[in-house]
Length: 113
Ligand code: 5GP
Ligand code: ZN
Image (cartoon, rainbow, N blue to C red; front, side, top):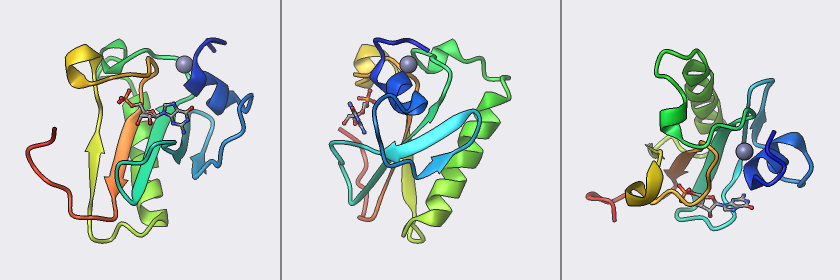
């Protein structure tokens, strides 16, 4: 828990949020500035500043992806969705707590901006 981290504070309940999914390790909540009709953030409760801080072999990845699937099934995303992780400055990361963006509810375009 990093008291200065907004996502740690959401995960701990210090900042109230509508949790769309929650288990012992992962929570999901709507993005405050949605870029699509559905824009959900899936995060580990553990403070990890970015994707590269979590080894690929860590079982927490399975938990995060399982949560993405649970969220996707609970929302009107039958037409598809996009899963995004921004890493570092060039990646466009602005919040230093690992988060997976689930975007959908409209036709997504490629290439991304
Ligand atoms: P990044 O640019 O780091 O990949 O994404 C950070 C995301 O967090 C942005 O889409 C931004 O709108 C969202 N965000 C930033 N602060 C808050 C907050 O306090 N609450 C919620 N729900 N989302 C936030
Ligand atoms: Zn954090």
